[in-house]
Image 1 (cartoon, rainbow, N blue to C red):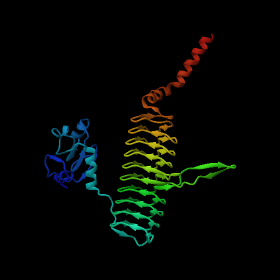
Image 2: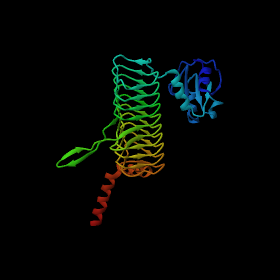
Image 3: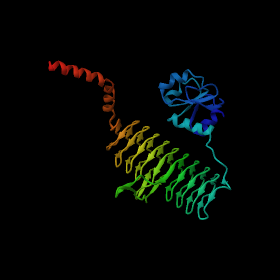
Image 4: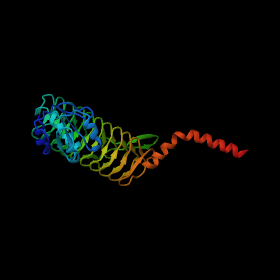
Length: 335
């Protein structure tokens, strides 16, 4: 593909030889002949100059002194992602319903759907246009799904779940299983019926083997644009605000409320009924037991303000030596 074609499809300014042939995109550390890469700022200028990349996507301040033809972008990382999409378009199975798929007679499937082998779509299901449902997906009764839905193999979507437009669910995820609710009674443990549902708004992505539990009553709500990594657990009655991202192996206990644009590191977790504000950042392996304010940045277990946590972590390896010194001082004082 010629560099001018890439710039045209991106709708961005080209500086340099538009006839340059681009064979593939590559990260800056691996870019070579025939490859297009990107740099997000001047701190990558030296790395770009040391590579033989055929072209680069750069911010305006790097365009004039770049060592190769460039496409000028206000957000090079985003536009490089678009280039990846040009060279590696997502898998789109052919339109149609595989003969081994089971679709209930009263299910409604929108136009241009692709439904793979052994998929099961049960009674009362409604799915919008352009759905891609890969093999061995199970959709329980009375599920409502919008347009441009993509669902990968081995996913289970439980009864009564509501899903918006342009939602992607990756392999093995379970949406709408019973929440973890039990009550002790007469020396035993009885399950509390989980009679609520799950609401997934538009443009959400749910990672592989992630689980989103249905509410005890009401709804577990995943707001627009939320991205859940693989192996994330969302407990019953949680609400996750718009564009929040949660990394792998993180978990939210029941009734956690998370604001907009928050970030959770891997293996972080929240105790039940905790409220997390907008734009909060929870670092990896943090254990949150109390509310985090808007723009909060916390780490550790129990989670505390990050600068305090880092000072404590710096001291921790010295504790054995500090204890020895304290004991020595105590012994001297006793004398």
